[in-house]
Amino acid sequence: MKYYLSLLFVILLAGGLYAQESASKHELFVGYGFAPIASIPEPDLPVDVMVNAPYSTDNKRFSETINVGYLFHVSDPLAIGLSYSHNTVKRDVVLGSSVPLAEIKNTCHTLMVTGKYSWLRLKQFSFYSRIGVGIMSVEKGKMDIFDVSSEYMNLSSATMERDKCIVWQAMPIGVEWNFMQHLALFAEVGAGSAGCGMAGVKILF
Amino acid sequence: MKTHLFSFWMVLLSMNIYADSYITLYTKCGKTIEAIILAEMSAAEIAEANSYYTSTYPNATYLASATQTYNCHSYAWNMSQGGQTCWLNATVNSLNDNISKYWSRDYYSSTEESKTQKIFYYQSDHSAVVSSISGMYESKWGRAPLMRHAPGYGPYSNMDKRFYCRHDVVYESLQCSNGTGTTRVGVSSTYSVKYPGDLPFGSYVLPTWIVEDGKGEDVIGTKANVTISGTIATISFNASGIYEVSYNLHLSGGEMLASYWFEPIVEL
Image (cartoon, rainbow over all chains, first blue to last red):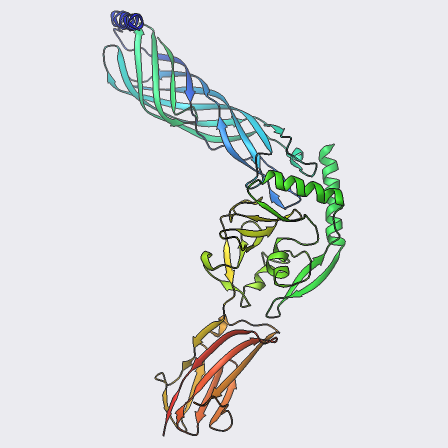
């Protein structure tokens, strides 16, 4: 444990030695997002012919997101740019209160316009907020029908289509650690389709 | 290919449903309800449906077999009252026009959840009755089995959107034109139902006006001159005393639907 703490101290110290002398104009980042939230379009599911009721989806589960982005500093504290997120979403197909009858899996691609404002700059650390809005493309889903299904279920007749929806991202608190001259680690917390938390690495130039 | 086969099956199914005979049911008050006598499904279909719906709804209790001969609306509003086995669609021409006759100025009227006898799920095209098991409902799930279930549990969406109905005999007072209830011999007063537009109606509903003296004897044509015009009676009394004027609605079988009354005091 002492070894790791010492190592962290050395890294922090080294980071200090490589502190930036002037603000960078460009940022490229790669990050991993946790617990994304988004409202995605409902697939067009058929009606169960036995009870004359439509199938629906339930228990939506997003995977973590992989994010890449570019930011351009229009001024020292303000940067704007684009980000791309990739993740998947799984949903159970149910008939009212039934047990899950099938699972639909979609791949999602999100392109967002994003803006970042740095509100506190220290020697190695800077604190910022970031927001974004964009479009999520939900790829044509793949449905796995569970064994519980009966031959009278007409779920297999469902037509999965590609769909789109508007998504957003709000990260009120972000912190960036410039541990090398052109390299920083970052972490953000907030909410949105890219995750309620994100961490990654940035290249500054 | 599967889609085409399924569509073909659906067409066959529709033809099967609509090829059967239409019948007319009547609400308790005598309004006509359109219903259908349907042929039964095959034994294999019934067995499959029983197995499937009991396994996919583990929190519901199976009560009776799947069948195509009756549905939820028929079970709740018709068969549970002794009506014949048939399929009853909520809508014939406009939304819920068929099923709503049961509670629109008829035997049932809207109530609160704790007093309900029958339930209409107005966003799910579904009906249920209250179970003898506290907190549970019973309903037929389309062509699937008859099940006992929690109010919001079943194969339908929006099962939290519910309309509650029960039957209660209405006891209310009549309105009197002289207001106080005290009148004089030879003076005419009118007695009327406050909201006549809310009264049950139908070919089985029989309205009666009754005027009795303190001994409970009919005095129409003797101590009381009565002119009746629907839900309004104009009465003048020939003798002093305390009377009871009532307007009753019965079913043709004798069951009371509503009673409106007034006790005029007639002075010399």
